[in-house]
Length: 68
Image (cartoon, rainbow, N blue to C red; front, top):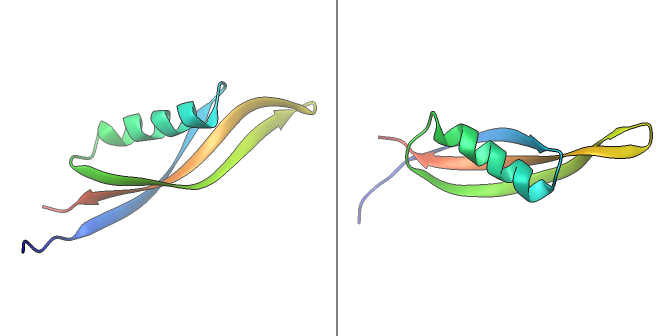
């Protein structure tokens, strides 16, 4: 069996539309600088409010990738 080591980073994505879009934004940003992502785990979801209105959604992820 192949031995592997993975690193985990935390990222937060923001979207004015949904938590799902916020997660996609975060994964897309990580994809531009890290290769071989394996898992993205949702850690926390929250909303940004202004004047008692929802103005955006934030999704915090733990993203793992294989070290070479």
